Length: 412
Image (cartoon, rainbow, N blue to C red; front, side, top):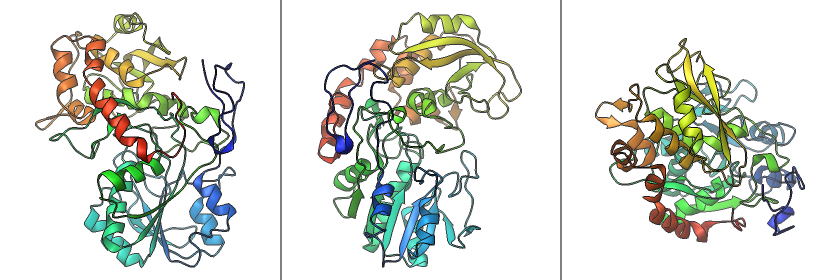
């Protein structure tokens, strides 16, 4: 695998090819690390609200809220997204509003909160500065980035300062996939960004402020040092805390922007209820022949292992599923969305195949941002034809985001 190493601050250590592992576990400092090292200078003396979940930790796994509370920072309230502040809820759930047992702070249930609800919560908490620290995984259908957007919009309405403590994008800084389009926005795709946006939450906040919020947010991003877009989670020394119950490892995050689309197929399990969600893909009506056809596509940076699994919950709980385990062999060349498209193209011809329909909506359309992928696959399009259909919009998005980027990309 070709890779470049980076010194602290993102300076290039080498711009040519390097052997894998030559510069492993590069030192990266998050926005939280930077703020803590300053003695919380940017927020001390203010009444703050913290939008966070279990991922907001330092390298000793101490949580941001616990540390600030112990150090005397005035916290008016904590706001928990999907899965909750302490992470006790499953997908599509939250912890509710209540008192945090460890700190005694009020925790507000912010999952699916409207902007009006955010203004109510911020007002009730009496905060003047909002601090956001959540590890994203880089996919448009991961809900934390809409928690970011709605809380930013509410902060702008109330004239609050908004501080993002940045963290690296664990799957790197390159953008992939189709754009969200009018008529297909939903809770799994609220804004016009591509499916794998390739930005950190700090960069996304800057993008939101400039493109969607007319610069109305009094925004400050406390940036990471040592990160660049070519680096992925396994290249840094940062600890990994699962951002949600079905995102257990950085390997899961790498495949998720692609195999997350399997949620749009009713006849295939995306591996929820197994130890390798989004890496194990299969269904009761499939067998080894589907996996063989996918493997024959020779997609870059990935191999497919014949696999059998029985989910303990979610789709096909307690039923044997046949399919594949997605094994990424080279993250530098792996395109998760192309890979998933290839899997869908080859699955479409199976008698068992069926798109998931919720009411009058095809779930795959909401995940991909339009009906195009589904209708092309139904019409017999190839993987290259489907992927090629969004080339222009992806290039336009890449240009659009450039003014908001904080870290080097250099072919990431």
